Length: 156
Image 1 (cartoon, rainbow, N blue to C red):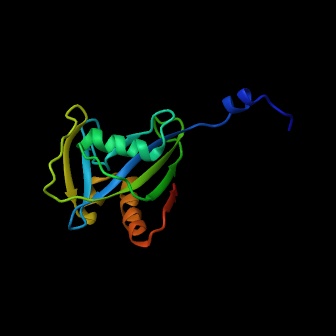
Image 2 (image 1 turned 90 degrees about the horizontal axis):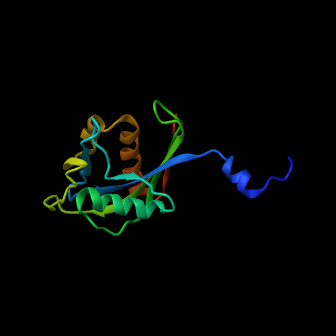
């Protein structure tokens, strides 16, 4: 292969999208989920990573924007990858960080322009509220939190 100018080489590399979220539980190990008003399903607090933003910073920013919570993030629990699908023309990488636990009576300051509801749910109930890929993340994140080992979930 012939040498290519770096600006040309980088411009021709494949691209992907990146998003980050936070796993937070309450004193009964229920998972904190948010109900975005632009989706039919619930989600982990989180969202798209902005240009030049590290994933953990994006996760903390999105958590604060969506719920008003400001927590010190712990370990990376899950990394997952999904191929282009539907209207998304590129693959996506998703990073899920440990946000620890908060009391179930914590007062949330929801972003009313984006979030309709916030709540804690038992993991078994999350499977019905979350899309399949996020339900896989929930189970993998709880296992990773227990084992101390990050889970990698490439699309099947």
